[in-house]
Image 1 (cartoon, rainbow, N blue to C red):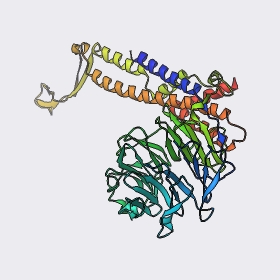
Image 2: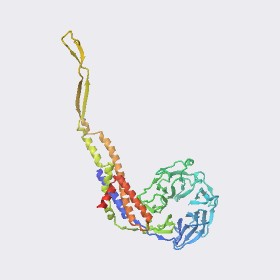
Image 3: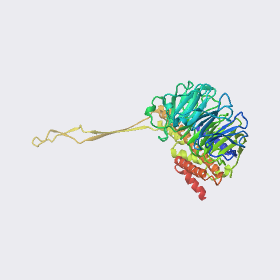
Image 4: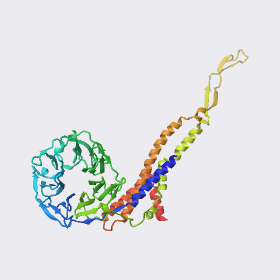
Length: 525
């Protein structure tokens, strides 16, 4: 019964993996930058047809025809002054905000005229990094801390505590519950459940401590913590209240309880786990931007979408309500229609790739054998426990007897030692006994221990098979992606080649080198 269930699970996993291979998708990217380079951020018009804003080197650009033409609507103090974020007002869509390295700007007429509404006290306060426009207040994240305005930007006050002293990297909220505000600062993720009146740090992942993630339950110990968090960005789900995603140097994290607890999403498919930002569609699809490209989280893995995208370093992602994905980078602005994705077979069919790989069942068997978690092991234990009652319990005893005293009668009254009681030689007593406990034929106490070990072994075997399946089919996907790269994508090609080696090494670790040895035999044959 267990074997049939296990084989059924394996079959389902294999079918799922094949479906993932056959559903590989490639996006067609269109350059709409109009020659504008070094674009830091993009804002789409949503309901405003054809309107796009972009923050470029030292200026804000506007297009009213979906990127066919651009014009400059605001010039900043210098080309080194970055535009870090562009946002529409949540109530009046004609109002646009721009958070820059030289303060916060606002336009009341769709970008035609701009006014600086936040004046700095020093250089750090002038560097506006993040922004959130709520109905009740505006939250502005600067390099010097968090500022809040509750009167339409006429007055600003700086938040008390640690979030008033550290750089605020990202701020977001869900429109259905605006009392919850989420904030990524240099020292962790903070959540406010009372519209920003109080804040609690709920998560910190330290970049300095390798593979160490620490939840924080008390925001009052900031002075003791001199390390910096590796969190870069966070984004609340647009449609599902309470779900928040955070991007950091170790990958993407998700919270389904308004930031109280966090779980890490898988890294399968990511060439680099240093995620710069995430973007959430209206259908709750999750897009991630890394230093290696753009990825979509689907079917518990990441699928690259940036094949054929020649944008150089990508700085920002944006989605509009028509399903168009925008990417801003050092070589301009690019867009792709997600609804127009095309399936592609690649340069070789899946069957061709599988022909050059070890059979997945053989690989699974090698992993089971190496870990000594075969189902036959439990079966043998049960059989041996069953016949234990037939075999007798043998007991052997040996004892040394030195208490016998012998009396010798010499028959003479003149000789010495006559009529003397002498100690005799030692004697050995031994015995052999056989015993049976026939009740063991009905029930053996060892069966209870075997049941516990069997359950633990099944769990361990399932974990091992799950790892083998994921690594095996992930390697096939990377091979397909590698073959579909252009010759000019040298950096991405080297990254995928290293990923292939990493996956092969992981499979070898689970199979005692069986995977690489089988590959060698296939190539030699």
